[in-house]
Image 1: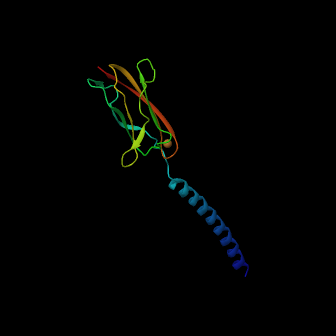
Image 2: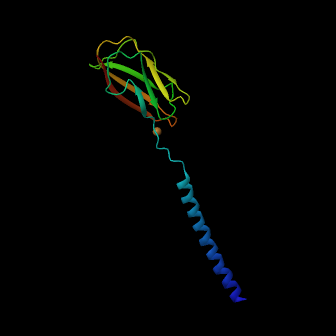
Length: 137
Ligand SMILES: [Cu+2]
């Protein structure tokens, strides 16, 4: 009988140890399986392209992002080479099949340097900003 109780006692300890080991393993697995969101809204292509020297003034700014962007909080501002906002630029609109394009119609641009400044909010709510230059000859 004593041997039976002893083995029962040892078995109980082993089972408790195993249970806590499984708990630790399950937590580790859950941590590894958690979705890791590193993607932020970044520009993959633009019209005009960065540092483009255009013979003809562009009719619009078109930015293509890597993910859908929120139209309510995303915008494009065009500045001249002195940093002064160019008047008459239309409010930026979101388009594309995946809502990943941001574009703004432009007024007739004079020859000179321009700075495109954009703000984009992706599905994860992160706010990203960027800028690039182009010029019209
Ligand atoms: Cu993000």
